[in-house]
Image (cartoon, rainbow, N blue to C red; front, side, top):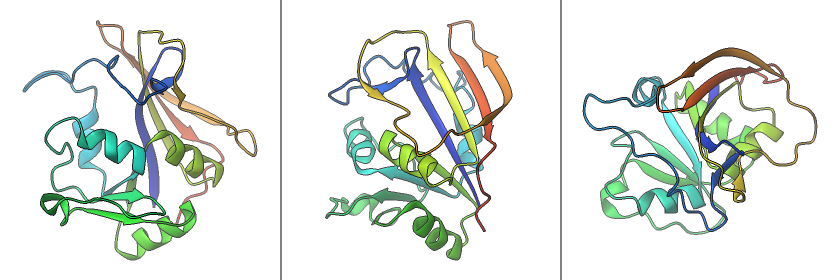
Length: 182
C-alpha cells in the first residue's frame, strides 16, 4: 500500500491561517484549465484519509469536492455525515498503521493523506511513501504548519520539480524512510 501527501503550502510553510482559513490559496482553474496535476493524481487514489478539521473545512467550501471517492475522516468523536455523503464518507479512529491495515484489508492500494495533524501523525508512524508539495508564492507570516515535531529525521529523495508561469512550484519526493505497507 502506498500513502501519498498532495498538499499546498504558503512559501513560508503554512497550510492554513491560524484560524483555519485558506483564503490565500488561488482558485483551481475552470474546465480545461490547469489543475496542477491534482485530477490525474486523484485517479490513482483509492481512498482519501483526512483529519476532522480538514473534513469540516472542505464541507464549508461548497459542493462536495471528492465526488464518489471514498473518504475516511480520522476522529475519536462523533462525526456529522450528511445523508448525501453517507455512501462515501466514514469516520475511523486508531493509529496510522491500524488505519492502513483496515483499508488494505478492504482492497485499498493507494491512500491520499490530507490535513496537517493527519500528515504529521502518518509521517511520525513512518507511513508515508511520497510527498507532493505545491508552494504558493505568498507569505502569510503565521498559521498552521505542514510539518511539526517528528521523533526522527525523515530523509527525502527529490523526484521532480515543476514551475508554472503564475509562480506555483510543485516538488515531488519519495520518503526514504517510508516503510511500504503490506
